[in-house]
Length: 166
Image 1 (cartoon, one colour):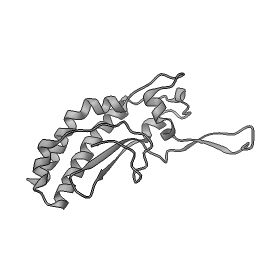
Image 2 (cartoon, one colour):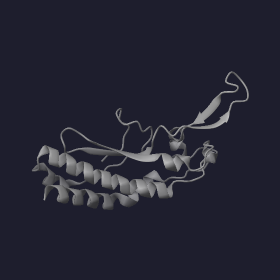
Image 3 (cartoon, one colour):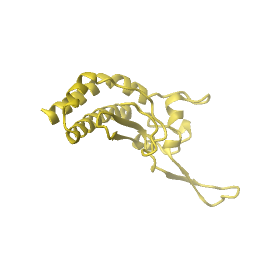
Image 4 (cartoon, rainbow, N blue to C red):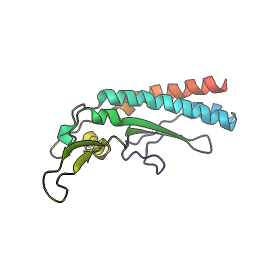
């Protein structure tokens, strides 16, 4: 379950990590393709939901120091996407800010765009929130959520496989 940028999944930033599920994998080998994919998707989705819930709890509400004018918008934009590959033995979950939470924050008062709306999207500042800048301190929430929930995610995947296959 590696979190990486994928061209089909439009999440601009994710913290990478993998989880080894070798004991569950042996049970998956003998299942039919559709059952295997369904079980893996269900388990990875549950695990990603657990990490997402923890990341939202750890995420800062006030991200104005990172350049976002609307409070709570960053936390609201966090989401997950699950992809199971064709071989049915590989699944990926991306957890991070989603695109499409663009919000009008003000109207430009000078320059070429005077009078036009100025928009902000939380996805554009996610890396700044997680790692910080020279002017704003880091507020890590994705990596700690991933690290704290690794064992529980393995359990979620194993439970889903047991439910679907046995």
